Picture 1 (spheres, rainbow, N blue to C red):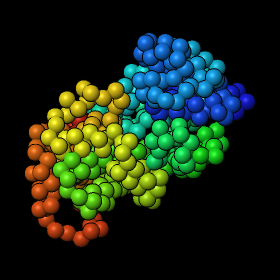
Picture 2: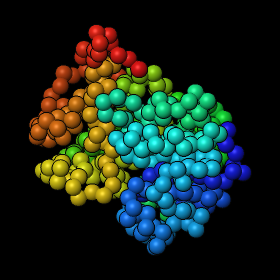
Picture 3: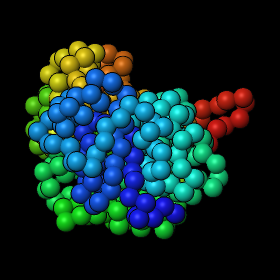
Length: 357
C-alpha cells in the first residue's frame, strides 16, 4: 500500500471535480500532477493558476502542477485519483495503466457505467491491471458538488474498496475539516449508486421542466431509488448501501441541487428543448445522458423492471414526448409499494449463453 510519506499524487481529469480534488490533496501536503487532455487548458492553468474552463473562481494551489502527459503525471505517484468521464475512461486508462507505479493506490471519482460492456470504472481498471495492482483499487462517491467542496462547505463522501486497508487509506488522505469520508466494503453498491442516480436526476429535472410540482419530484426521487435498489441488489450490491451517502444522499442532491448538470439537462428537456442542442452548449459532461443507456441494458440483462429509466431513455433517444411519458408512468398497473420485482424481460444472450456479471 502506498504511504502518505510518498506525497506525490496524480489526478487524471481536470474537470471541476478533478481540479477540486487536486486542490484538496494539495491542502493535505501532497504534490499533485493534474492531467488534462486539452493542451490549451493545461497552458491556461499554468499561466493563470486557475481552471477557467471548468472551475472558475478557485485558484489552483501552488502544489498543483498541470500537465498533458500521463507519464509525467503518474511518475512516482503513490496515489492516482481518476476523474475522467465514464465513456472516455477505457481509452485514457489504457495508457495510464502502463505507467501507474506498482505500489500506487488508484481511486475512481467518476460516476458512470460504460456503454456496451456495462462495466463500472473499477471493473475497467481491474481488466487492465495485474492481479497485484487490483487489490489497490477504491472508489469515492457521495453527495458533493465540486464548487461547494471548493468553497469548503461541509460535505460527506464514502470510500469503498474490497480491501479494507485501501478504503481506510483513502479516508485518511481525503478527510479534512470540511470533507468527511466514511468507508464501505460494498464496492458494487457504491459505484452503482453514484452512477444510477444521475438517470433519476434527469427524470427529476424533466418533472421540474414540466412544472409538475414538488410532490411529483418527491415521488420521482422515491420511486427512482426503488429502481436503483432493485437493480443493484439483483447485481449483488447490499441493499443498505442505497440508504447511504452514495445512494439516497447523492440522489437527493443531484435531483434537487441547482448545481446538478443532470437535473439541468432534464429541466431543459421538460421545457421542450432537444438533447443535442442542450449538450452542444455544455462544457462539462452530464453522465446520466449516457448512463441511462447502460442502466436500461443492465435491466434487460438482469431482468429487472425499470419503468422510470426506460421512460428517460425513450424521451432522450426514442422521441417520446415528456408529458406522455409521465402519463404512462402514472397509469401503470397498481401494486404494493414494496412489491417483489419479478424478472419480466428476456436476458441478453451472447454466444448462446446468458451473460451475467
